[in-house]
Image 1 (cartoon, rainbow, N blue to C red):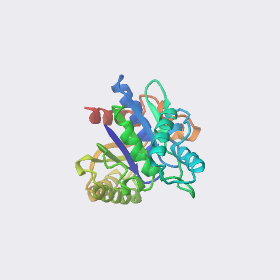
Image 2 (cartoon, rainbow, N blue to C red):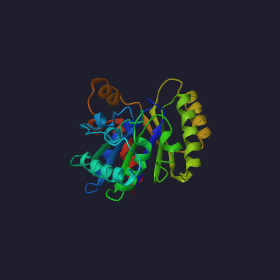
Image 3 (tube, rainbow, N blue to C red):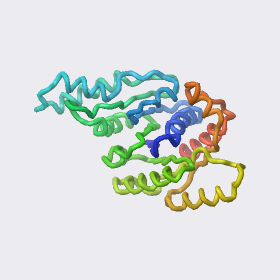
Length: 257
């Protein structure tokens, strides 16, 4: 199962991604899980509490620097890439990890987004669950990199810009071939029991309705997430009693059946 997490920057995509990796590992103890950081900001590894190896972007650049003549290099590059992806997949007891990184600069052999498609094709054969934490931008969807997604989770917080971004992501995803019934909305940092909750709920429900995306999960504001972010502790280690963990374990149960 390929699960892609997208959304505006700062809404909590990486938190959702990291806890989803943890919760699926808790529910499916023998399942092979691969986490992929497709965000050039590259903070998925920190959230997962692991150290990434050489990024795919660096691998591309190393090949480009060593092979300036690109003629007849396609097969050579793919063989090289396949070998280096295997060598630079980080392994833990519960999941494996790949960092895409950057590599779009002058002299690069090909784009990271093009290679992500190759990585997904190669790796989906070996893993039961592949979880991709996407960039804040829409490059992966607009370039049809993740059109094979079984599930597209579009994350937003309560801000209007987050919902506008969700609507845009849906349009691009549909145009790129993602099925509408594979898209779900995840609301993060929801204010439950706050002042003016009725008015806030009405506004929130209106924004959700405007996206025309099925809401699948509503995560309350979680003090543990804020504390772990501030201290630099891996989000994957937040207590099981945390509001975010409780909600995402429910989400994981739904997704994994």
